[in-house]
Structure formats: C-alpha cells, structure tokens
Image (cartoon, rainbow, N blue to C red):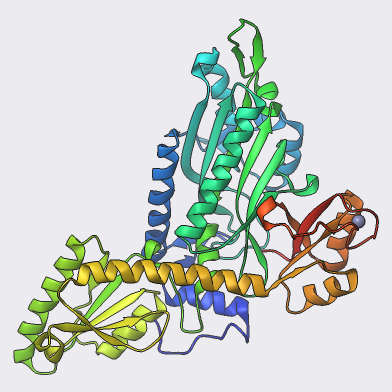
Length: 482
Ligand SMILES: [Zn+2]
C-alpha cells in the first residue's frame, strides 16, 4: 500500500511528481531490464479501455485485426533506404538462437511496415482486393537511451494500422480519416485537446511521403506527440514489390498508409489532468468510475450498510457504470478516500446509516468541490450524467490551460523569452528552410511540432519567418517536447 506521504508538487519538480503519481496509483513499475516497464493492473485497465474504444472505431471504419511476427529478417529493414537509416540505430537484433548463430540476424520489430508489406505483396493481385485495411495490436522495441515510464520505454504497446490503396488520393483520405479518428478519441475519451497538422520534412517518419501528428500540451508546458498517421506513398510498395492489376489491366504499385498510437497516451493522460494529490482519470477511461465506501461504527449497522451498499453496487452496474465496492475491513474510510484519490477514481459514494435512512449517499468528486447528498432513487442515471459532465469539464479545463500557454504572432525576442518561461506552443511564421529549423532547435531546444491544420492557424498568416525574417511560407507551431 502507498505510504501516507504528500507527493512532490508539480510546481516543485514536475518530473518527480510524474513518477510519484504513477507509483502511488500503482500504474506501472520499473523492471529488472533497464528501460523496460511493467504495466501494473491499474495502468493496464486504462490501456484496455483505450484499446476497446479505439478498436471499435477501427472496425466501424472497415479495418480488421491481424497479427504479424515479432522477428523481422534484418535484410527487410534495409530495403527502404530512409527506413533503415531511421530505425537501425535503435533496433535490438537477435544473432543467436537454439544455441547456434543464425544465418541471417533477426530484428525485433521497431515497427512492422517491412514485414507487413512483404505479406501484402503475396496477398494483393488485383484492384478488387483494394483497399486492404489491416490493424495489429502488439508490442514493439526501440532501444532508447533515456527512458521515462509510459513516455519513452524500450518496449511499448501500441496498435499499428497498415493499409494499401489503389490511388494516392485514397491513401491520403485514409491518412486524414485516421488523424480525425485519433483526434476524436483524444478529445472525447482522454479529454485532451490536440493540435493536428503535418510534420516538416525533418520530423516526418522514416520512409513516409507525409506524416501527420497530434500534439498535446502537458501541464509543464511541454508538448507531447500523442499519435501519428503517415501517407507512405509508394515507397514501401516499390521496396517490397506490392503491385496490383488495375481495372484497365496494367500493373501498378499500391499506395500505403500506416498509423499508430501507444501506451504513451497513458503518460499524456497523467500529465494533462492529474494534480498534487495524484492521478485524475477521465471517467470514460477509468477502471472504476464510482467507488462505494460503506461507513458504519457499530456491528449492528454493518449488516444494514453492507446490504444497501451491495444493492447500490448492483444498481450502478446494471446502469452501465464501472463500480467498485470497497468493503475492506480493518481500514478507515479516510484511508480508503486517500487511496482512491491517488488512484484517480472520478467519483466516490459514501454510504452510512444516516444516508440510508434519508435515501441518499454522499457524493465526492475527484476534481474537487463540496461533497453533496444524492438520492439513491435513480442513481445510475445521475452517475452517468456526472461522468459525462466531468468528462466535458476536464476537456474544457485542459483547453483553457493550453490556450493560456499559446503565443501567437511572436517576434524572435518574444519567442526566446516565452520558450524559456513559461513555455508552451508558439505559433509563428516559418520560411520552411531545414537550416532555419535546425538552427532554432540548436538554440532553443524547441522543434516544429506541426504545420497546423487550418482550424488551428492564426487569423492572419504571418508574412515573415519568426526566426530569420525571410518571407514565411507557412505557419508553424514550436515547442519543447517530450
Ligand atoms: Zn527562417
């Protein structure tokens, strides 16, 4: 059990606070293998909620799940030049197995484009088989030097979508449809607002034609890339000879897309909503939305209270609420409140003899405010409404915080000052030159997060590059990032 000790505050040390929130909520733990992470049941429950919501949406939009091997022949990675350059430095390679040196070393997948498109080459012959829309839920390994729980670990869980299309336009439509699907998930489930847009050439995925990304702003005003969607063009189709017979009878290469989100979203959830008392979890993703704490002093109260608590639990469950009745003995109600607060349970219902007599329970919200009595009659409907209300409030609070930490139309001097303190999203004109982008990164550690989609752009397009003063070709969002 967690110690009764206050967490380091966000203001004192954000990164220490982040680790302590994870430990207190028992979301994850360090593993014997450096850089790897154990996801504990409380953390895995959040991942399962995320998976379920996303998987439903992937299927609604015509995708099917499949599974491809963990091991990839090393030569596969080399077939796409940029891809191998991008991923080779961080791959784990198996050279021995079964007591013998392997003829060809096997890479532990850092991502599965190569092995999946080698199979697509076998499966696709005709335009009638397109589009092919596949997703896989799996683990991947990228040998990271500096790791942080959920944010950057050597092995992590994710989904990777891989599709093949007959035309560039169809591939682009798929890439953007998924970007929109991710955005809706992040806003409606994680209650986390994101800025979407295209990555610059320097930041795009190794082997992609275009990369689109979703960027969120954490409470320490650092950006976090929460997901990406890539139009891969025909790069991998050419490398793996994925060709199809067109309606006219000629042979053409397919157009591919790939897209993914990872367990990193749990880190994003933590840093978007949690407070100095621990985890705050949006109701839609919480393992338990409501915790019932029975309260009694005398033994004769116990039977009555526990009976009522069990009925309440059943009623909430029947109403589609994820509920847990904390009837543990030998633990004070106060100790239970403290524990569930640290674990981020959105709502707590306290039920004692006097509440039962008056036909109500005391409702406490994780996001604060006064406790209040709520009638037991119709409580499932009430708690459903409460969940939706808190979900909306969390999104709105995060949006207000992000906008307060966004600077538009900045000059170079303002940018330099702002990025240092308080930090946040800086919208500015950009000349589009890679040298300029590299110079800014070198000088400020800020990177172009995205070239924002239209709805996020400033009302007037800046005419000069914020940094070098030459004509601007596009507006860019800069930030220091995880
Ligand atoms: Zn410039």
